[in-house]
Length: 71
Image 1 (cartoon, rainbow, N blue to C red):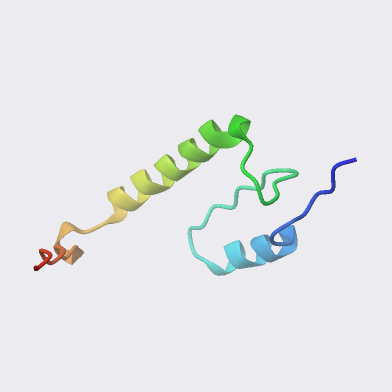
Image 2 (cartoon, rainbow, N blue to C red):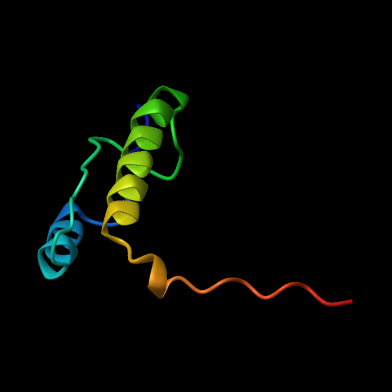
């Protein structure tokens, strides 16, 4: 029997999400230290949606350009 090792108790994730305005909590049953390849599309979609939301809410005037590397 495989042992399930949780990185963070679900209750901790719920508490954290409740403290962050506009947060979205995604609970993946049985998720442990590894990322099963079958979950990669789900995770990619969640990350892409997060980035799209952040992009829609950003103000281009607030973005600073990175300094060019020297040397």
